[in-house]
Structures are given as C-alpha cells and as structure tokens.
Length: 77
Image 1 (tube, rainbow, N blue to C red):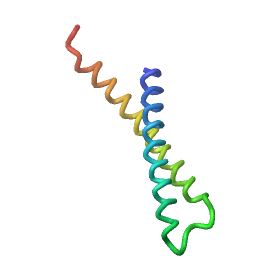
Image 2 (spheres, helix red, strand yellow):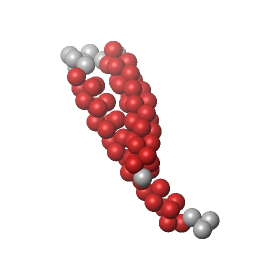
Image 3 (cartoon, helix red, strand yellow):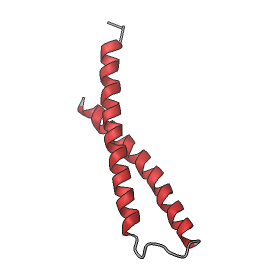
Image 4 (cartoon, rainbow, N blue to C red):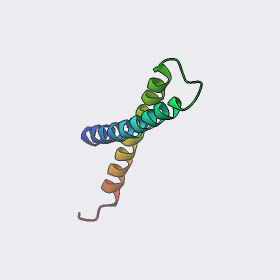
C-alpha cells in the first residue's frame, strides 16, 4: 500500500509542477503587459507551492482510493 501512496504522490507532484510552472510562466508573461506587477517573485512561488502541494495530496489520495477499489472489486479470485 505504501508503494501505491508514494507512486500517487510522485505522479501528483509531477502533474502539479507541470501545471503550475505553466501558470507561473503565463502570469509572468501577462505581467509584462501590465503597468502594475508584483515587485518580487514571492507571490508566484507561494501559488506554485500551494498548487503543487494540493496536486500531491490529491494524487496520493486518488491512488489509495483506486487501489482499494481494485482490491475490493477484482474478480480473479
């Protein structure tokens, strides 16, 4: 079961990193066209960390639920 949780967490982390790197880069790009931008990179880092953390937790939880459903519903004996 621990391998399933770890795998789900790694997949969730990877997907979260991809999504939130894209979000951060898009926000940074849009910010160049605006007159007022955050003076520092700190807000982008906070959003990135929160988003990746959420994806990691959701990935681990989803993997655990799917593993338990597989064990409950398998019909091969």
